[in-house]
Amino acid sequence: MNINDLDKIQKVDAPPYLYEKILNRIEDSKKSASLSTRVKTSKVISPLGVRWAIAASFIFIAALNVGAFVKLTQTQKSDSISMLAKSMRITQTNSLYQ
Image (cartoon, rainbow, N blue to C red; front, side, top):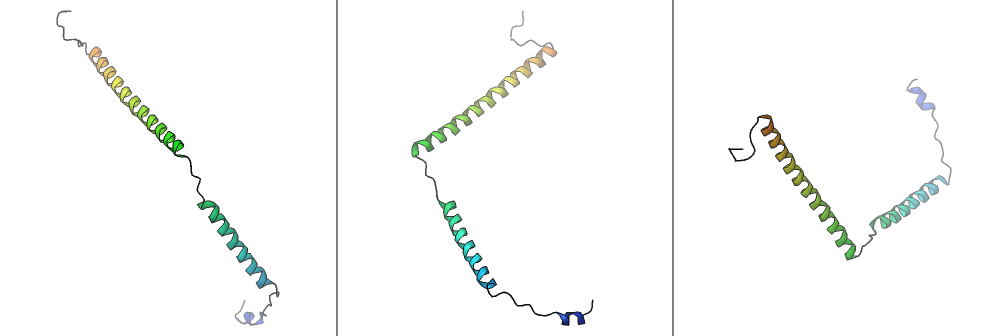
């Protein structure tokens, strides 16, 4: 392929309705975009009681999780201490004469 081959290319005329078709598609896309943004921005407002119920349930679940975690760590701590004392044959009471 030569640079001289490019001189042989002829200009192509577009059909007369092509420009109109492109403009119509642009307008249609603008309309559908504005419709979709209207749909996305519409908010569903829930009643105040429902909001409070959801907030209270989240707080209740969080409190249960914290309580379970604290209880679990305390149980594991006391179990590990008693197991260590048993393995070393150390008494767990303060009574010396048993």
